[in-house]
Amino acid sequence: MLRYCLLTLKGLLLVVVLAFVSVIAIDTWITKQNRSVIYTELSEVPDFDIGLVLGTSKYLGRTLNLYYQYRIDATQALFEQGKINHVLLSGDNAHRSYNEPWTMKRDFLKLGFTEEQIHLDYAGFRTLDSVVRAKEIFDTNRFIVITQQFHCERAMFIARNIDIDASCFVAQTPGETLSLKLRVRELLARVKAVLDLFIFNTQPKFLGPKEPIHSEEALSEEVLSPLLPTSAALPTPVSSAVTN
Image 1 (cartoon, rainbow, N blue to C red):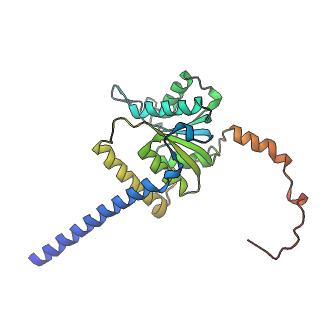
Image 2 (tube, rainbow, N blue to C red; image 1 turned 180 degrees about the horizontal axis):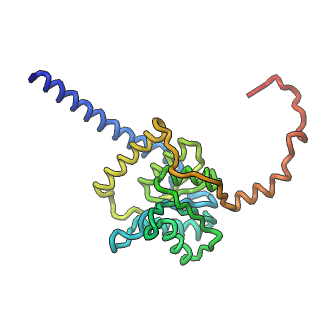
Image 3 (cartoon, helix red, strand yellow; image 1 turned 90 degrees about the vertical axis):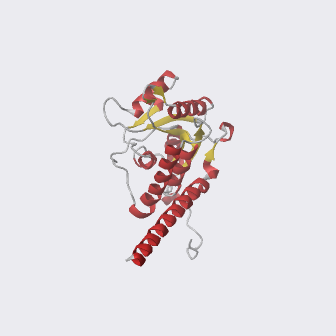
């Protein structure tokens, strides 16, 4: 009996150690994988036209949530420097008194954005939903996400592993380091992101009909497309023996 208990205890200990190592490995992988598309300096950010702002609550109780405010500030900086022309505000719309996209919209209108430059995604319940819906619903495969560093890393991990051409601009993080509670929450979110992408093939909670953002890039493509030669007008290749 004692021997059986010891074997069981060793087995449980091994499982705990393997789980811990796996979580740390996933965290390191996500942190390092997409550094080249995460920007911390405004001057280095390419022009993207569309900025995807990931939502969070504006207030924590009666206190302004600095994670929210710094995302607004970072987006405004991109806009003022001409890096983006449109914003896609994605967040939770749980009930009438809690509406992350609409709350952000009010603040951006105060900052000088026009109605035409603001687009709302009310079904951005999770990071995966926000990123995938930007492509599938709002018909853009090239955009820049605005959020904090740790969130950028996870968002880019999701985007790049489902062939979305996204980058991320890092908003300021309140304080010097994440709180223990937020750090643990992020670790679990990263594990779930890996499971969603590679095990469960998780899809957004809601999809629906397309609502294309008529950005400058999209309009340019529409203007140029009639000028491009059709397949019938293309010259016949000299030889069809060589294939890719």
